[in-house]
Image (cartoon, rainbow, N blue to C red; front, side):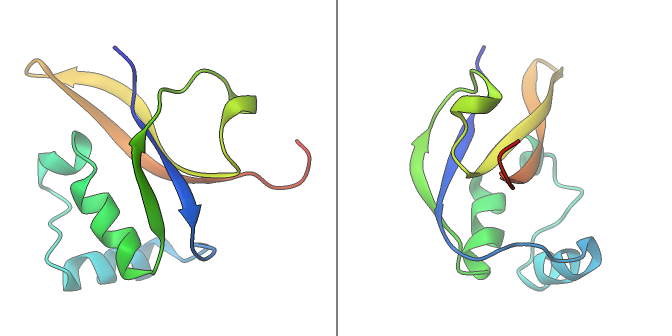
Amino acid sequence: MTVPLCKYEYGMDMGRPYEQVLVRAEALGIDITNSRLWSETTEARRLLHSYKVQLSADEIPFTNWESLPDRALLAVKWHLELGKPHWHWVVFFRSGTE
């Protein structure tokens, strides 16, 4: 099974404290205890959209670090829970040349 990756096309630097993003998520009615957050992109996309970050509709499989776009919504820590894929979402920014 491939882990989805949503290419981050346009937007702003998300360098925001976790607590600030959590407050925004709660204001949007995003419940961080909802297990859909770990298996679907809908809520992560909605949160990023509230910061004016646009994501492509396409999801591409991760093959290696070099092939990642400079910015991406990346699924990490893939695992199964009750037979359903789950992961943790991170916003990936490539910095410098490494």
